[in-house]
Image 1: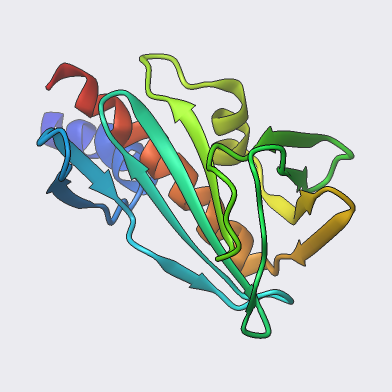
Image 2: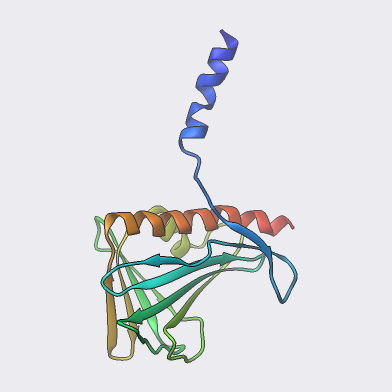
Length: 168
């Protein structure tokens, strides 16, 4: 009877555990441990690739956009607007990279014991659209249901597993 009780007690743990497929490596500059999702391709209206990396000090979302083979230009004043499903709420974040015309867009979050609000929203709510804005040029990306889940899973995994690097 006790063993049956223990099995029933742990079923929710196994049902809701996340399947985080992160690569563990060493940062080439600091030689500290680093977690990465690797680049994942999103075949949306505007195809893009996304890699999410976590080190002890920060969590970085690295977007690469190429619209029809033409890379996008971004500078340090460029922003991205995430629109969340089932609400009119949005999150606006600034590019953390320097001027480039290769389509590179970085988002940096501090890796800390408490998850930053914007990262927490990406991890807990599904994103319906992503709008990259550079001056008057706007690139709107609509995500399908599968892409929404992949993005949410990536953010949730890195937010959760990134905290393990704080003790190393």
